[in-house]
Image (cartoon, rainbow, N blue to C red; front, side, top):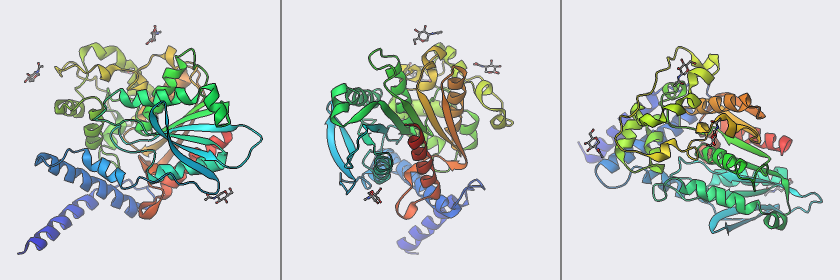
Length: 401
Ligand SMILES: *[C@@H]1O[C@H](CO)[C@@H](O)[C@H](O)[C@H]1NC(C)=O
Ligand SMILES: *[C@@H]1O[C@H](CO)[C@@H](O)[C@H](O)[C@H]1NC(C)=O
Ligand SMILES: *[C@@H]1O[C@H](CO)[C@@H](O)[C@H](O)[C@H]1NC(C)=O
Ligand SMILES: *[C@@H]1O[C@H](CO)[C@@H](O)[C@H](O)[C@H]1NC(C)=O
């Protein structure tokens, strides 16, 4: 039996194994979703294999794939697109060409990628930002923040805060003809984590209080102190975002220490002195009854990890950990959640807590939705769901910004 036959056989088994894994019934375009999900699982298996034989770090495969989708800054008949720096941090700007009497709204966009990969320049974000700029006549700022593990926490957040503060200066807003009362900040997935944290920090800064009109969070991750919420349990195997992959990659934002990954997977990573934080993420208290199902709340096991990671208790990493007084007076908030998403409950808890303190929240929930779909809106793997999410978000902006 030849080498090729062996390889072919191996591929068939792997594909069969991946395709066998069931996806939720109400998902549209099931075969396309299975295909994308399979590719991601294969990439993850491959990355584990390559890491085990010492050829390549697990996370490299994801950043390599990202780099294939980087676009150039190309202007078109409606928009001038430029790559520049704000306060030494690279940004991509989308500036409408159309003359307008009124000053323009603006959207600051923070891309996802579990803090380790992604770019504001990848195809799907480029399309999203063009569309936003076109539909709203808005200035759009994509932030090319630093990534882990080269730049761990709080590098990404610091870059996003710095760009936002730079852009909000009176003379800069005036330069781009932006209306200071119409600035929104948006992020998807880990970009949503960063957007929520930036919004909280600006709210606490006397100079920047009330300068953001709205925040838009698309299936954001908002905590990792409890990795056993009902949505973590139900959607451990995806589609698209898998618990083990997410934890392996996300932990790199905190540390390269692999014992942290194991502890996170077991939900035994938090220290004794973090006990007071669990009331902020207690799903048994905040989750709507419908989503609790038969899940039983278990108190987390604390103090098992003998290494201390202060980042894990830092509200700048996990926006859900701030107390109620720091949630008060946050700006108008749009949150889009997907049912089949292991990060779903983070948002449900945040929404409940924001509403409790009187923050105005608009919530779109897609019963047929799953995590990451906004990154599949073009090319052979374009998903109807991705376009639906994009359109819902842009429609909300048109009505509210
Ligand atoms: C430019 O704007 C017009 C009017 O909104 C639209 O029909 C056209 O498709 C836009 N062009 C591009 C390249 O997006
Ligand atoms: C979580 O909520 C449940 C029920 O609301 C309560 O019994 C439990 O003590 C809470 N645990 C923490 C750590 O807040
Ligand atoms: C942490 O615990 C492990 C075993 O559980 C031990 O091998 C290691 O030396 C400990 N590290 C520190 C810094 O105490
Ligand atoms: C909330 O947190 C802030 C800072 O993190 C602290 O100054 C304040 O006292 C806290 N408020 C309450 C009610 O615990």
